[in-house]
Length: 437
Picture (tube, rainbow, N blue to C red):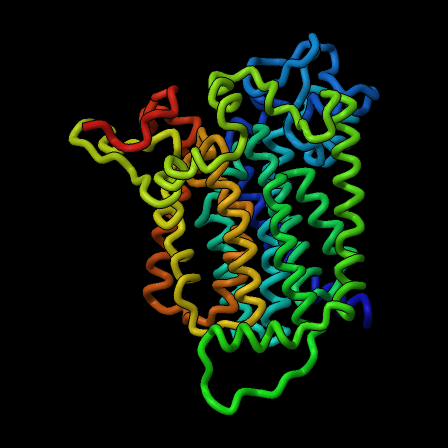
């Protein structure tokens, strides 16, 4: 009986995983049959397996985004994706077909998002059906930046493939502060994959404070949002919330300590991840403004909000900037989070946490370059999916019309990006965002 119940619970997520992984591999095409052009995580896995911090063999393949310090080459990207691909590296070494590996693993993201949406539905948070959950899962899997990201196989995109299921697992354990220690573990691994996701800790803090607050009497009359917030703040019980917050923070503190030790071992500075030493053309601006600064916000906002396809009378009639397309254009459903029918504390916590990560990403020294869709949105896209579910807007005819549009746009990107250069602007300066006059 227990086995039967377990099978019933896992068969839908397993089916989502299998279907998505199969479609990603099919979309990958010939790129599945060999190593990618940028095997940073494979090389980092080899280095770690040989007990050294610098690149194994001291000669990286290629010249794209390798850090150079004191005569040695390093991978500056956070190391957890290298741990994820390590089993394959143990078997095949540097000949592992990493695009195929990441495309199969990419099926895990939508599968865990489905589990998250099912949990919200069964907790009476959404009032949606299993069919609605599958539609939202399919929207994420094939109607968002995740689709083109899942079929690239190179270092920058592989990190997102690893971070998305970790983020979904963090929400599963962290919403209503259900499993503080496990939520902290998932966010710690997120930090070792995509550091900006660290700001998702705000969500757990709000949820922990909310579930442990003292009961306050309901208002006798409708209140302004300021009055509601004030009443919520007055009901908080920090002493009761502290044990959950401490359990949550423990693995994060350990992960931060390990990161500082690893950084000091490589670069003699616990706060230096290595991006300062990247051999890239943009090093001058990084030296001047840093990796994250308000200085970058305007350009990144232009991509985030206003980057559209370039239309012309000359074949192929359509072209995309290397900065990619605006978030609302590739996934218009995300606009729905701005006017939900239903708002609760969890919705507000999701919104604040997603907003915090979005602001950090928008102040980064590049826009996500080179990309089809705004890939940095994947740092908080799982939260947007949860907000769409909780928000209560009906998935009617208009929703499905936009669904078809999002699938079509992102299918085009998944098929053409890095394979059909005629559809993409070839500017290499990062200065061209909009179609020249």
